Image (tube, rainbow, N blue to C red; front, side, top):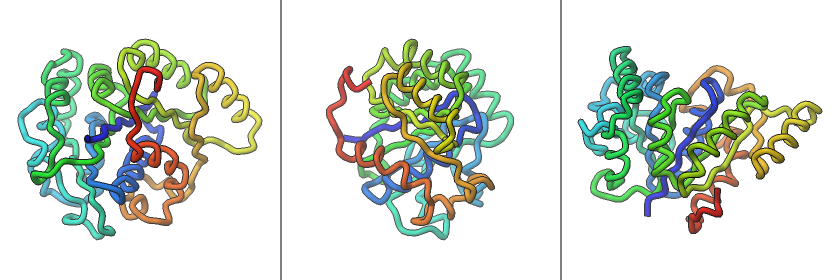
Length: 258
């Protein structure tokens, strides 16, 4: 059984991509893992991997114009990174490709759901153990379709009540309609700060569960860097171990998990 994990957020610049890639690295040490860049409005992967050899993109795959096998790249083949069972699919960073995805999302193009529902989740003729789909906060229909197929939904917010209100709204209007495990993360949390502690109390009262708390990590401030993220010294990994351990146990998913 392939476990599908979606990474979602309330707004851009929440640190979602760094968290998604770090989690992909961790899961890649446990089984065959695929990271799909579904943030079509702010793609970075094709640039940071320093390669023009992506034959197809996640844009092509999600609407059925390319197979998953043709779209993915094995990380070990294209970078000076440690061995791992990790594949990636990049989003097209051209402006026309971004605008096209915005239009398809507004039109609620049924090909998005069809691809996600019918995908066999195999690469190189072998099944994947884990798939991570990194999403954009601004593509509403895509968020709904990805949520529908997800076993786990890792939701990242900054510690403010505005983003908390968005999470509450999505739980009521989207996530409550599907069977998935929702695991919230408060990123850029300030341990020891009284405002942060108060926010955590409000969070638990309104959402009903305690979030994973990740403090500001200075060495990650320069942006996405795979050699830094895919490294045992990446401190972000320490805060994701609990989520990773839960995922690899493959629990029975039920409506009580939400």
